[in-house]
Length: 185
View (cartoon, helix red, strand yellow):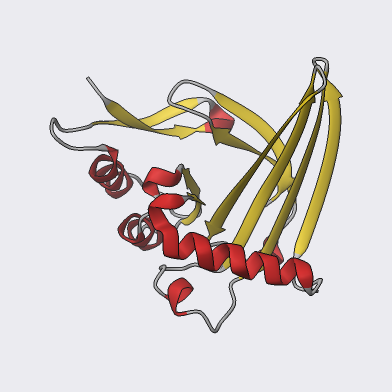
């Protein structure tokens, strides 16, 4: 049985569970799960598979915000997002907020940098996404036993950047694990 769940990370509580229909995938199951919940005031996070305009619209309709990972399944959005962030970095945009954190634990050196900025108003691509107000990226660099690993996640979030503050959030790695990262959100 394949299922998806709504997880309240801070409470470590499963709020709801929805089975994925045979001959289907998680997307309709997650959209049905969103319809089942009272999400007013919540921030809904999901991986790249769920970066869908219909899913974002359902979340916004439930009076919630979203944080969705953008990858190759939304190629046009990913290209536009990368371009907007690159331009913001190159021009040292005063509206961009950044946070950098370096830690050493478990025998590894790890650096994370997070940047967020308001959605540019002149983009037809961003205008297609319900409630989209903020763009962001997370860059990670980890050194373990002399080997360096790098990764970048780019996300779109409906929350306004003026509410950005330092806090902990949980990020789902897969269906069974979570990790806690401190960043600007």
